[in-house]
Amino acid sequence: MKSKYWLKLLCTLLTLIILSGCWDSRDINYRSMPIMMGVTKEEDLFHVYFIIPVSVVSEQRNLAKVDGKGATVLDATEQIQKKIETTIDLEHIDFVVIDEKLGEEGIEKIINTFIRMRDMPASPVVAFIDEDMNKYMEMMISNFEEVGTPIFGFLEKQVGWDIYDPEVSLWELYRGINSYTTDIAVPLIGSNKDLTMDYLGASVLKNGKIVDTISSVEVMIMNLLDNEEVIKTFVTIDDTTNVELVDREVNYDYNKKGEEIDLTIKLEFVLIVAEAEDDLTDKDIKQMFEDKIKRETLQLVQKLQEQQVDILGISNRLRTRYTNAELKNFVNEIYPNINVNVEVEAVIENNGKLRNLNNDNFKDWEEE
Image (cartoon, one colour):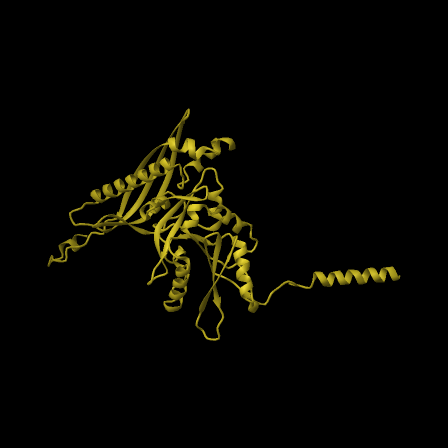
């Protein structure tokens, strides 16, 4: 009987331990949850910045900047932890900014560290910056408190993102760095006194290092070739002609003959004429648009092939036809020799023709 009594008591105690709930929970008042992270390097030390919301009694929202230096990114984070009394939780970081100079040296180890960190989410948007990190962080806080502009609002597709702006998350950057057939383009940004940030194009990474920079027009071509849905946006054909993209479809046609690969990229667009000279017909505008997109696309593809960098996903579409051993050198050996042709076809849905309001009888109205 005594043995059964102690057994029941032991089971009860174990049950109480299991049902004790969140035994390791921390009160929110003792937690700091950064929403933005900056990483740069000064001499041989990494310099890490966090922007943290500060609780205040009033309804005004305030932000605080904390920073620390260390031999590694984790070491720098620990130095920040020692400066403040609360525990730093990284689960709510939405934006990671990295010094462009670090990108030129290589960020593979940094990105691998982020992925290994258990409390670091894989979803934050990543960007490079070409100016002093401390001044940039101060500008972000100042704009938020004075203007009320969200720090990373322009990176959201439902807010201010458009086809001329790249967008890369942490896990996409990690995948691009460690893929045999896919490279990655990371947004290059700068501070803006009136708004949150300026887009300066994108930095092209190969094996985790910046090898080139592409313009906003080249970013547009990159986004057009992506399979994701394209938001309605305006495309400038020349100084006086603009069209709005309503829809687009992209198809890739591969033809392999021995070692030679032919690729035809077919782009189909539906357009609305937003601005044009009166003497231009729909046929003229259509031809101008098709010529521009074809020219810009071919120039970007040829430029990337010469540098042995594939941010357009061309190599990735062929990877199933090759072994893993062949894929290791695919971008360096096979991809540069692919014969690429571009076909563009546009349909003007609405030409935006204005009625002749100088006609007193409004005959052109009555005819319709």
